Length: 390
Ligand code: GLA
Image 1 (tube, rainbow, N blue to C red):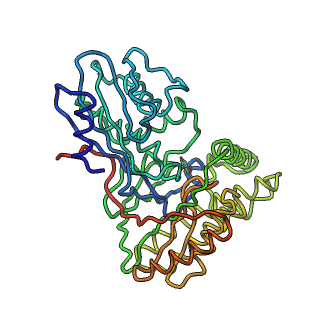
Image 2 (cartoon, rainbow, N blue to C red):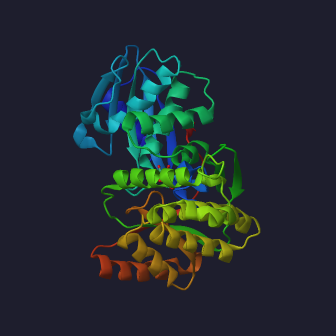
Image 3 (tube, protein in one colour):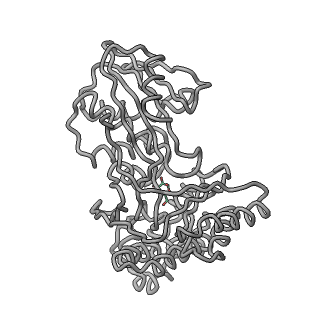
């Protein structure tokens, strides 16, 4: 749906009397560095051209009216600036409500309501961060409508706080950072310990990044996610009996090998191993991209998947089938799951000229084994959250 159609719908819905503004926040893929963010390690995500649009206009009173073209059955949902508490039945509007609430608690002056229409084209439940996208599109909307002077990293952190404290999902900073700080044709190497970051041009020559959606519903993903976090915390505690470290991200592979016996529980040792080795791979991945060694980059993607499959155990048969099917195709340099896992999407580095045949083969293999087909998208890396000046 183009922005003009969205504006027409907005006008029909709300008959606004003040200026109509348009905002966009992308979704994200993570090239490599999975389950490292909350372990104080590196991640290497990029914002993609799929995302969430928000059309909005200010109101004179303290009412806020929400409507989403993705949840039309919910109809128009109304709240007020004086009633921003989390409520389960408020469904998807809890994301924007949480952002408004946390902005106000942070001291930003939001003294009038607004009307807003959302539309997202991020595939549903695909693990491409549609929730962080709604948070950040709301962030830039508030910034512009109320002329707030807010630092972008501050906005990113507020987004994460909403996710952790308001929604109740204990996620790291990667998604909000990638979406808030994204840059066209660049990935972001982010040190989640310090929030130091650098942009790396993603120039893949004759290769493209193909996104493959398992189309599996991500059940139990949140509880498993929290379980992994606490397993890593236990492992860290054990290591701290001899090492002066604050996070697994501070460990080199060598240090880990020398001290891994300190971790009592075998499962927790595997989880920590993934976090440490994945961190190392992520730093190497930047070097490979910088010297244009795409074969080497692809190998790191494969190693990452295997580690997530065997040591971190967050893949599952659907993601493993997709990755394996991709690895077996001529013209594929590497493939791995992306995001939290337990379903969702994988990415593959594929020769432009072979995309059709590669997709056909993977589709066949996956459908035979799993019983339904995957979906494919081509990822282009776009800018982070912003107002669209039409
Ligand atoms: C989810 C979380 C992120 C990150 C990834 C795994 O996307 O929101 O913070 O932990 O999983 O790398």
